[in-house]
Length: 169
Image (cartoon, rainbow, N blue to C red; front, side, top):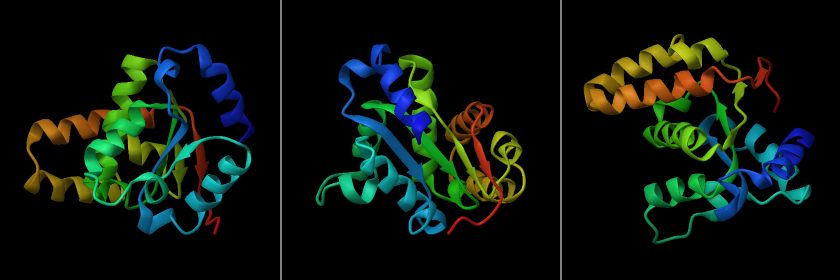
């Protein structure tokens, strides 16, 4: 968390900071980590004075979810995707990581991935549990969308991040 705070301070001169509404955007699959790891991280960031976007706290009733999430990513200095076993089963998570990847390239946004009980290689190469999910996605989504998601996972999965193999509930 100190690294996130330090990175937030040092990123104030980045091109994305001029319009930043949030210091940090958390991307995660709720079923896997909402009630444990993501919740602890969110509260630690908030308690440290870091303005953090988490869907259940920031999305307003009656608003369309997709555009609100993408807008929040674009208006964040730092994005922290928390990759977990079911992350890729959610098209929302995959759209988020694609936007995070895009903002990293176009706005010099800082991305700090966390690999929660999944290996960085599984994220990068869509192997392990991710492989089966992508086989299912190929039946429901067009190839352009699938490739965009795969490229984003590969890019973000190649970043140095934190890897937790143990249950931290």
